[in-house]
Length: 158
Image: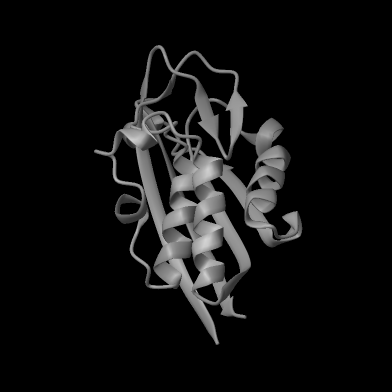
């Protein structure tokens, strides 16, 4: 049996934090605000995977009021999600995701993001698509106030 899930996440850009997207540190003057490392792309992917399996969302698995997740590495959380899926009898078919950011440019980092995500889920990087787009200066991402990401995935029973 195949199941589809979708995820979306958004975080505000702020001073004094590193910008981590797709498990990759990106050279930029601001980072994303959040309880964990605020990796907006990985958060959207985790929600898509958990949603496809009807296992809730990342807030259920990793509550933002639990200090054990303060500053957490989202790639490690993604590995945990992969384990939860396996225990529930699922394997990841593929992931398609989009980063929505006016700046910085994501193209130089996308292949590394794909590799980090695939490794965390123990799948081939050919099963992970990461794209990036701007909103042509419109909205909060266009004004460089934050970054958003969306993801869709296919999972299959083992």
